[in-house]
Each structure stands twice: as C-alpha cells, then as structure tokens.
Length: 149
Image (cartoon, rainbow, N blue to C red):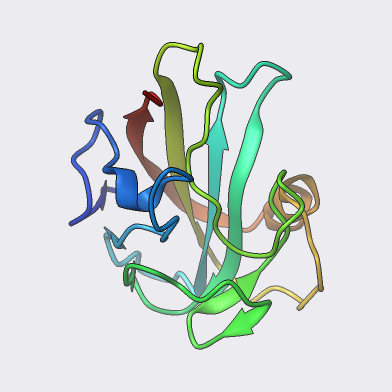
C-alpha cells in the first residue's frame, strides 16, 4: 500500500508548520484504496527518540483513503477516532526532537483493516496495535525527517 503526502515527500524533511516549532498541524495524507478494507488506522512513530519509540499520533476508524491537513485535535471527528499520543494529548502533535539531536525519522504508518473497531476514549498506540492484530489487510508508510534549529 503506497502512502503519499502533499505536505512532504517520502524521506524528505517535514516542513516546520507540521512540527512543534510551527502550527503543529497534521500533514495531508493519502494512500491506496485497499479492496475489502472497512477502515484505516494511522500511528505516527519516532524510533529515534531518546527513551525509545515515541508516538505522535493515533487515529483509527478512518473510512476514506485520505486525510486533509490539520485534522482537529478532538476525540471523535468526521475523520475518525483519535487516541492519546506520548505527549499525553488527543490527536496529532508533530515532530519536536531535542535541539541537540540530529534529525529524527517520523514514520506515518497506515493500516488497512477488515473491520470497524470499537470506540475507546484515550486509546494509546499499544492498545490500538493489539486491537488491529489479526485485522490487517495491508499496511504502508511514508517517512519524513525533522531537525530543530
């Protein structure tokens, strides 16, 4: 499953507007429509964080194959159900690596699922991953980098 963004190219730098140094908007994302997928889920991970993989976004029960820029940071919207990221917030919080670090990588994983999942308030990435286990029809990602100045 191919994942693309109008906001940045795969393996390129993520523009400031999608980070903690800018407007902290979620980037626009689009992916292949997958046959027999009933919904999609997205988990954004930074594997380069000092304490291990850091989660920047958890959203699921997406019923289209794209999201616009700036999904509202609320539990339930027309785009899907959002969980809690590792900042402790609902919705998207963008790249914000320590200023002393080299560029971190941010993986926007998109999961195509054969079901609509139960709505759970304040779900985290680990719980979502266990819920989607056995329901994945396909998976893809786009990766962007960011270094603070």
